[in-house]
Length: 176
Image 1 (cartoon, one colour):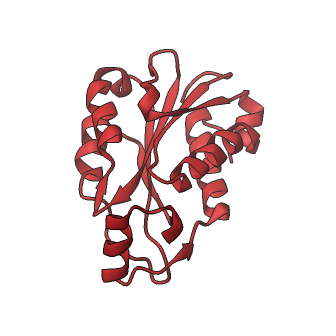
Image 2 (image 1 turned 60 degrees about the horizontal axis):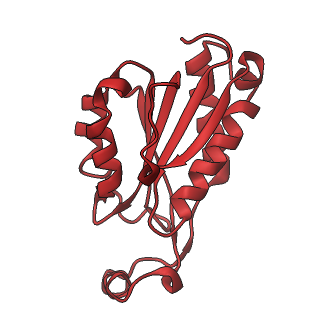
């Protein structure tokens, strides 16, 4: 549990914007949850490429889009570069990538378990993603087509809000 007025850093690696939009919703929703409001939680959103320093924050949510079963390299590099600071505060991880129903791919990203162990993360949440062929490179479109990946927006905004409530409640020790 952290003190009232906790500052939360939401840092994200996103390739085509869908995971960035999930992170923005988390940064917006965390302070608006009952626990977040009661404790005066604030949240700051930053792209991982800006290399935000986690030290001034009381907690961190670190997320990445998942491609080919892995987090994006900038997210993995951020976790490695800031391991010491991240281990000193509550950290939660989130991933975005599965699409369709049932989710495709069904598996968790390969590097989440080791990253979670490295950082001592309190939890990991997988959010469904979005596949918009018009945003993809030629190679990405070819791979998506070959794999018959379902096209469309599978993001679940209610799940994003519920997870923000869970994180705020865990962070503040107050009911969500």
